[in-house]
Amino acid sequence: MFVNRSKRRKARPSGYKERTPPSVPSPFEPKAREGRVLKLIERIKTHAPDTRDHMSAIEDYRLLTLKDLISATIQPDRPFLRLEWPAFYYIPSDADYKQYYPWKPPPAANRYARDWTNGIGASTAKKGDGSLFAWAMSPTIKGAIDGAAEAGLGILFTPKHTLSRVRVEPDLAFTGRHKWGVDADPVVSVSTRVIGTIFVGGFELNPVTGGFEAVPNFIWRRHLIFDVSNNGQGASAIVLTPPFQVSGAQASADVLVQAGHTYLLSIVAQVALRITTTDSAGRPVQVRNGNFDTWGSLSGFVREIWLDETVYIQ
Image (tube, rainbow, N blue to C red):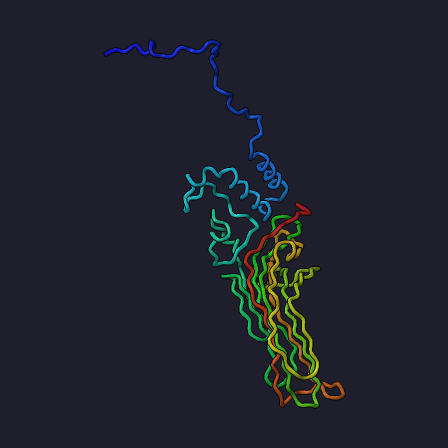
């Protein structure tokens, strides 16, 4: 049955005026998030590409602008936005890159390249996890000793520019321990000193010998963890230093580099130990009866390394 619905409509009230829908937002009207976006864009432009601050600003921008899309489009194994690994960002050789920069694996050149140990005592260095351990100890008998235990790791860097300055910015987390103990013949005077230090800097590859040498006119950045001296005989308990954690510019060292040269930009943990034994006249003497229990150790991680290059001559 046909029904004439027009007859069933209510009559419009007197003075009724047809209303149009409201306007859609103008592109010139400020949006709630635009202020934050503009601030992030300024942060991105302020910092040099591939630096820590630059990549942090990009990540903040990504999360802000894609917030409404992340839950719907991003899969754990297929990120919505794939960014290239930062050119100047380095991590341990065996590290899971997803814990550092989840979008794309790093090139092989952006992983730690070398590890080594030197000197007395017992040391280990592992480029795989970025760990360093250096331990220098005195002999049980024969107190005189003067040496250092070292553990180091580094990255290889070959600059493209004629002359530039590279700032090495590692993330350091270390702790130290040391102990003093001397029991020797009463006629012997004993002086002990143990120093724990983290060094940041680099070496230069000698293309002829294939070995690494000191960089000319370079002074290593030195982070002192402990420096303890004792005179005479006695003993102390094991002393644990407060955790030493520093990164970025606070940990950095500047190395002047040249194109065509290869550098091993490095972090070295060193424990230096010196024990002198002298007679009453101050002459060195070898100890034949006694017990020396003086030692120091450094252990920790270099979680990541950033480089910041300033070009002087293209």
